[in-house]
Amino acid sequence: MHAFDWIIVIAYLIWIVVDGLRHSRDTKAVEGYFLAGRNMPWWAAGLSVMATQLSAITLVGTTGQGYDDGLRFVQFYYGLPIAMIILSVTVVPFFYRARVYTAYEYLERRFDARTRSLASFLFLMSRGLSCGVIIAAPAVILSIVLQWNLTLTIMAIGLPTVLYTMLGGVQAVTWADVKQIFVIIAGALAVAAALLWTLPDGIGVAQALRLAGSTGRLRAFDFSFDLNQTYTFWSGIIGGLFLMLSYFGCDQSQVQRYLTARSVDDGRRSLLLSAYVKIPLQVLILMLGVFVFIFYLFHQPPMLFNPVYDSRVRASAQAGQYAALESDFAAAFTDRQSAARELADTNDAVSAEAFRQADARVEAIRGQAAEVVMDVTGDRSYRDVNYVFPTFVTTSLPMGLVGLMIAAIFAAAMSSIAAELNSLSTATVMDFYRRHWRQQAEDRHYLLVSKIATGFWGIFACIVAAYATQLGSLIEVVNRFGSYFYGSLLGVFVLAIGIKRATAAGAFWGLIGGMAAVAAVANTTSISFLWYNVVGVVGVLAVGLAVSALL
Amino acid sequence: MTTDQPHRDGIIETPDRRMRATFVRVIIVEIVVLLALWAFGSMFSS
Image 1: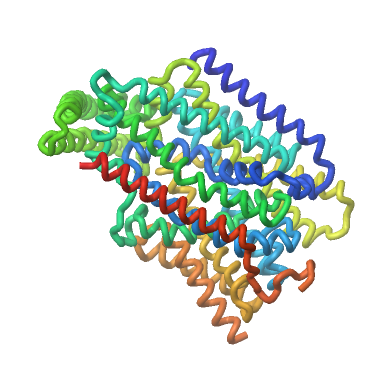
Image 2: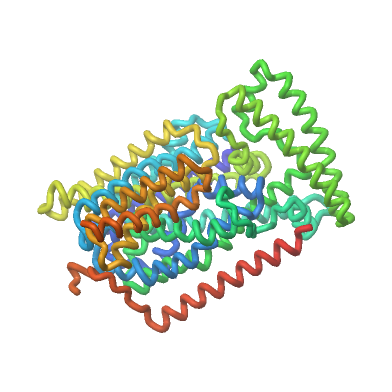
């Protein structure tokens, strides 16, 4: 990386930390630390909602999916706008008027302390671990692609975030999120412009899109009703709806964003901002991956994008087989380039078929190379697509843009981590420390404990990150992990808000029953993880209603 | 219903007219975005 790029990354880190620390002066009470005195403008809370959801995993993993699979992944978000409307009608006024700090606090008012404690405990476990994954995912990739030390990369992402979150509380988190979402969007737009700029002579934007389209990469709809397929219209609109309801309605890292708004309507507006913007933003990020695919039609890519594994295979007993594949790959790349030119010139069905076959040959060789990597390294979950975008950024973008995009990846990681640390601290202090251990103390005492809790979770996440290096497809790991708990948490809130005759015992056992149902389905079927959310809700409702009727 | 025990009976309040209009706008925008995505994909896929 060029010195100028380093300056951009370091300047970004200093800017975010110094600005975050500035807000620590305004935070002198627990309500200010956790809820910004319920005085945030709706647009800041709304941008914070978006920044929290958009992690580095989204930025790096989604561009990789765009390269590999095109726009298909956007179907995951089709249920989001509907979820936001449902939440605006239900939980936003409920939580806001209840004057709660955490979503789980409401469960005690409606049911009992053990249901609150169990729900909050599930949140702490799932989010505490996923926070580690959110740090690890970009750290692993950046350390491999840029050949940085992994531990130092984890610390470079984690420590500044812990510092400003611990000292500045939710105000620092929210205002940092606002800046970070703009850094991310600016980075994405700049890379999109650079990709368009580097189209080869004779290839216009329309021709480039036809090349991508002929491989099916511009199809954003798959109407097949196959429960084993992860990304279809139906899994997005139904499974995705339940996941979004649960994530934005029951996950404290998101609930806390809109609880900082000035009024119920401002809380609603902050959620509805994502309803308008999320799908177009996701399309932009996926299109970056699609245009990277087009870029590599005309510029020879490495056969595999992970340079560390590439070196290990070259030094192994299978180096000869790998070299032969590399020779085949170079020939297949040349054939595909010619076929792409032919299709761009003629735009007929015969050329399109020839191009598709040439592309399939390239992908088949890459698949064989990935098999060799798995044999040599033992990493059976290896997915090369996670390394495509960072490799492109660091090897093909001009000076300045590399620094901006690395800063954007840092921004995406830090915005999600900060919100999670802040919410983990809130749940720890409000649902456990203040509820069970020390109910009467000065505000100053709780503020100190809150800062210590934030620091504790930050260190915990960094330690988890250091161990979470074998991650497979990054974005799916986090979503899959959340899906084990999310559906059940949503189910218990549906019982609380929607069903008058639900009892405390019904809620508690329903929550356990829902998780058991998800575990059973996950371990005995090949149903896609997006459907676990539906299973969890149905499981909680079935068990919860039965227990409510019997006990 | 008090502030200390809000909505214990599970009543969902109806949003006002302005907010309902916003919800309708969100749905319309989503439909337009999805149609645009469909048209975009169809235009360049062969």
